[in-house]
Image 1 (cartoon, rainbow, N blue to C red):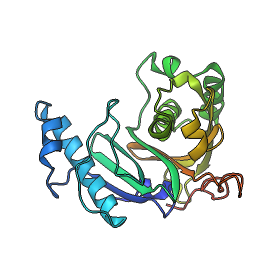
Image 2 (image 1 turned 180 degrees about the vertical axis):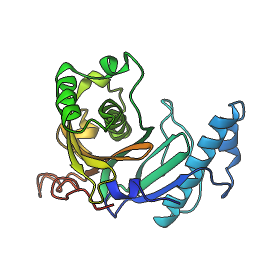
Image 3 (image 1 turned 135 degrees about the horizontal axis):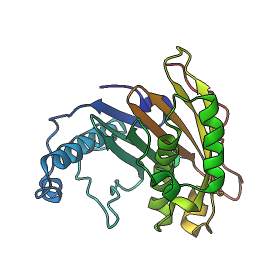
Image 4 (image 1 turned 90 degrees about the vertical axis):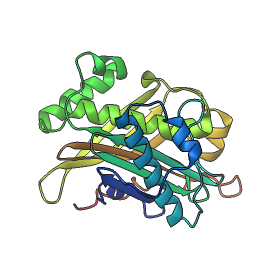
Length: 253
């Protein structure tokens, strides 16, 4: 086990992350059927991500059950749970929380390194690219384009379960901030994402306003991002719970 994504999420989220693979607990037959015709690497990453999810759900006191993909490939979490999965070369992670504690969760893991040619222009807004140029001048060792891409993936994963609609890369305006690791071995920081589309009622009722707050970390060969959206309060007690990122500096390594 490792503890990288754990640094980016509040304690009320249960995080399970590994470098490599987990062979237990076994997959359910329904899960096996999903990847029966997939290549070996896809089967391995699917299986380990589900096993990580099972451990996170167990930490919430929930019994094991199949975690199947929905129509858009999104994991169908048990009723009353929000969660997200991610994987990249050599790393798998799952995070889950009770929906009474968090309104939405989004996580993403990427291999550190620049995006392929042309991808940044396809996934970013002009203002975001201008901001990346300024950040790159201050912290040239950080793969800023990859951080931005990963953060947008986390935004989508936090958005979709309640919004139930697609969100294009150009439909959220991101702003990144950076802070050196306490040990000087890496860089981490926070980000905000302003949604540029009308909010579906289900999203507005649970998550609230158009801005999502998140955190990111570059650790050696990995770029990790996460969003933990607080539960929106009722009309009797208006406003959102404070973001777990708004008042918390990046945790020491």
